[in-house]
Image (tube, rainbow, N blue to C red; front, side, top):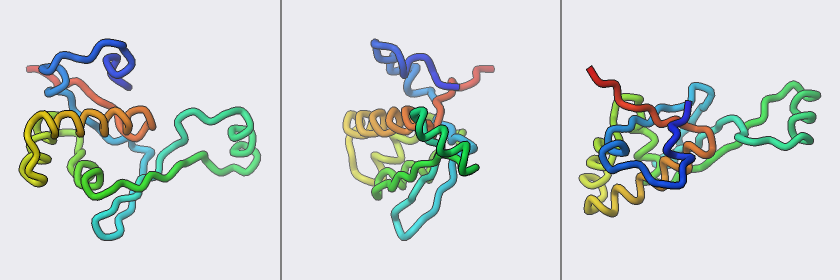
Amino acid sequence: MRLGWLKQQSAPSPGAMGKAIPVRNPEVSCSREGNIVTVQGPLARPNLLLRMASKSSGKPLVKSYELEEVGSFVWDLIDGKLTFDALSKELRIRYKMNKAEADASLGAFLQMLVQRGLIVMAAKKTK
């Protein structure tokens, strides 16, 4: 379940982006060493040779990503409840960023996580 706007040419409206909620892929595992989180998730687009090797070995295709301190901080906050705006606010408080810096950094980071299949962006439910 990926939001269509991540694949479109045009960017989402600021209102839609702010209300989007990042949700971790349940197939992803993570470990921590100090302030650094290592995330392991399914390989997004394995080629034919890798798929055949995985099938013959019986081992799933996974890839590890080591997140730096700020990325680890954001990863820890992704709980399926906090919106983009809420995560941006936490970044601004913790790292003394202005809104433009926090939004740009967070947007790029979340888009990378989506492209690698580690999270999905869900639309906030309205009542």
